[in-house]
Image (cartoon, rainbow over all chains, first blue to last red; front, side, top):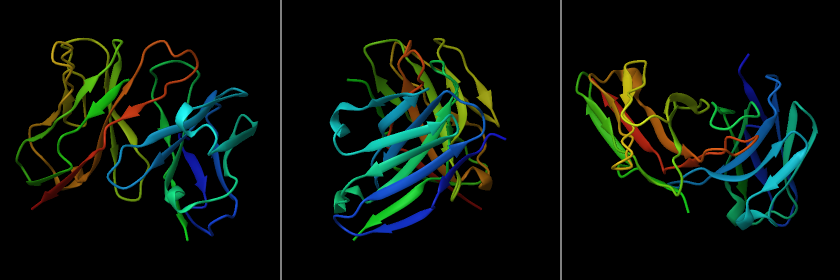
Length: 113
Length: 115
């Protein structure tokens, strides 16, 4: 099974409220990623976990948090949602090597109102 | 920094005509290049990847040749099918990232094939 599962598929959040998105994979991949995709823009890497080590991109460092309680699960946490967080969030995973195939989930569409 | 450019946001074709989707890139290193395809309501999936100059990987009738001299990795298919309608992303991955395969994407090209 090469599926990355994301829940929920759609999420509505209020401005100022927290948001938690969930992702899981059963491929025993060492690395899990979160990308943000806005309309007419390229998917943008927010952060990734290699094993238990979290790496956050410099320009989104303070906007997103994440946790990985075990190899299979990874969450993306927004402490206080703003309108600018409305986007598709794609979770992905890959074996712990460079330049290998990355497996994506179908995404969670977050709408902040 | 590294970047990927896909010049066409939308390509509309009639079934049976050839497909060519453009991709150029800028990178400090010699990166791996990828094409990912995302069908409606599905996850993006790997279509092709390449690291070797002038080699032409093929998959599902699609092929792409990495030309390092022109920093290009255009996607081609000789005859479009209705089922090829999808969003196509070109992406690069810098080499030697240790445990990650993080991707830098282009904005994507939406291909619509009609009968």
